[in-house]
Image 1: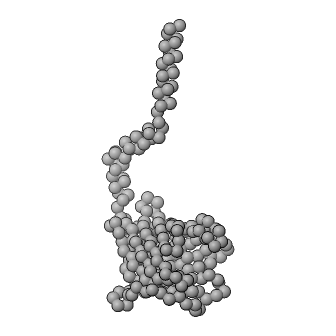
Image 2 (image 1 turned 90 degrees about the vertical axis):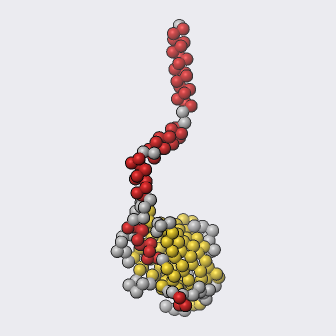
Image 3 (image 1 turned 180 degrees about the vertical axis):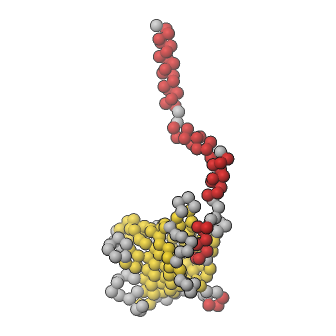
Length: 220
């Protein structure tokens, strides 16, 4: 009888010990062991190095004079404004940071963007914030080294219509003359509808001013 009771007590103690084990803690400890493995550390270090995929980021660097067209109604001419962009690589060429100043719809418009190439997913990642938003626009897309057109897909909020997580397409077109055309298009409702186009022309010296911008309506 005593022997049977001892077996029950030991079994109960083992069950309590098993319940006390924290699966999350065990997983964290196992991951830490894996990370400390020399081969795993080498893999991680290799993944952090700039690669050929980061070369496309250099296409965005420099000073640019911009002309932005905002299309609110396909039957009407766009609203046009001028601006200025400064872009430079950071963190050893892993990212490019962009600062834009100009106007939109008659109001000052300032924005900041960060773009990078993710070695792990083999994707371009882009973020954008501005003084006309409280959300962060995030878009992603693939590219190849001889790229002339680079499309990215992202999501945005549309407070005027109440649409949340609205999918849109960004597209960069690198021209032979050194200029760059950036477009945003809605892609949910039938044929893509261009809502914004920005033509950026490289500039330097006196030809490269920080434009305050002046909105005006005209065709073209």
